[in-house]
Length: 138
Length: 311
Image 1: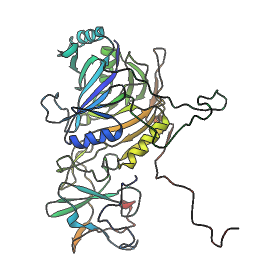
Image 2: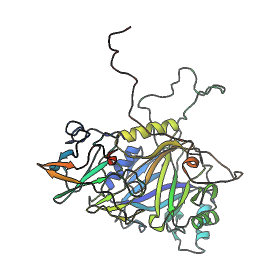
Image 3: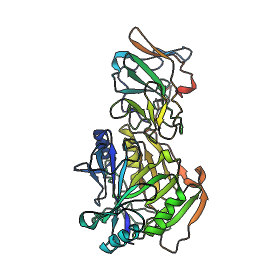
Image 4: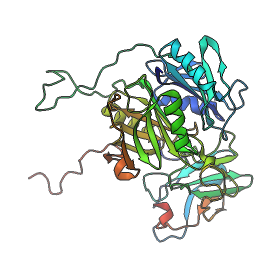
């Protein structure tokens, strides 16, 4: 999908991540606010393949891929969460996911989970611990 | 029974602002009090999920709360009330409206239609072998041309028992099955319209019960492509389309939405009468669409000037 504009804080892939690198720098961790999520397209696939959200002191990254039909979750750029910001929703068929665990608690794929991706915060930067060549990012 | 089709869909949502922005960006006109109208006055109504005036929810918010059918005359309201009173609670409301649940538990109401007359241009086509529809110096398209949802076309429901749900609409409300995906569900046309379907039912597990999508008719395939590409450029997520369905022949483009269902743009649907014999086919990629495309950013076949200068 055509992104609205470059995601603020995101680094263009390639500047800081070569295809062989084992991890990808995404954004300053403090730019992620509670109750909001942000999609990223690190490999330049044309749509946001992953999304990050803050839960308290923790930042989580999930694959943007609903276990029900394998489609993107958001209804609009960065809109992955319920109105109160407490749940992840798939806006394709209304699956509700626990934001902390990624487990589907309501909807068509109850009991299945979003794929949580390895990540970490270092020197204030959010890193995705996957290489750009990962199939998850295509 | 002169039932025309859905006049209004009422949703209970957890993010009223997001839904309002969405429906406005989709092209409906906000007319106040959570109402978003097409050219003929058919509409989507957005309410906070905890609004006490709403019928009970059938799933977590956001979700459909009421489907309002427009009927052509007062006799139809009386006929519906008499028929449904035989085996369920029927409540009468303002203007003789009839309120009852269908056999799947969806809250329905029936009222004299709110559809108002309107005129809007057709997408005129110049096809060799046929007299031109657009004469000399009449332009087919222009940047910024107005595209507005014209009328509420249809709603699609996930139901736990498709055969039972079909029987309710056919036997009790005199809908006709125009076509059917075997084992999946029927396309249904009420007596007051020629449209191929105003209702499509899809068999799902009970916990998925709800609306799969709804759509308003646009004026043409070109309008579907233009409106959809503008909607996508605003950042909205395409789910399926653009393409053209086989059953109904309608152009389609589905988007994710904050209403708890997909929202579609459609156009150019087949019309049928009672002479039509329903087609039955298994559902699948080949039976559900003539073709499918994926929108891409605008592009132009240009490049850097050739090396070594012009030849």
